[in-house]
Image (cartoon, rainbow, N blue to C red; front, side, top):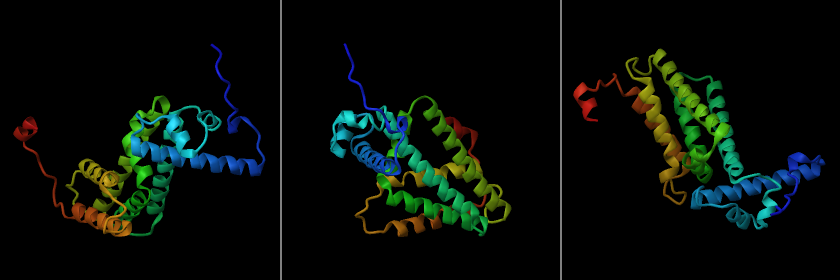
Length: 226
């Protein structure tokens, strides 16, 4: 059976600056539409047709910009990663104490999450649907991100702001779990603003880290029962 030929994708053609700008604008519209569809329906249940309907184009037209549904998910993953990396780099460049750097980093991170809750929710809920090198890349980034959080905590330990006995591995995972869960419960029409919640998260994180005076030892019996 003959297959229907697809239009050449933008990367296969030389474009004028004006045409390139139109293409980038359309790509952004498609990615935004995909984000809405994935957020509402879940990646597995969503289809290319759903995205095309949201954009208002024929399904075949989307293949001018993508090769698969996974391409759309990857664009969302890449966008969130790029923003998270920028926030981290900005925080690392601040001339502040290590503990203040942690507070500001958490505050800025949470604020961006809350102002982009659909994109962030898709990022955390759907990344496991990636395949091959993309999936390996995301797993590697997650490990690297946790390492950076550990290093931030260790710097605050070295400065004497956090107990040296605190287990940085558990502390980093605790902080990441709390921050990454924000999209699961946040409602934009709630009584508290994104900035207020972000400030509170920053303060709570610092309070927990500085207020944990020692490493809690779990008994062998408790570990066996867990």
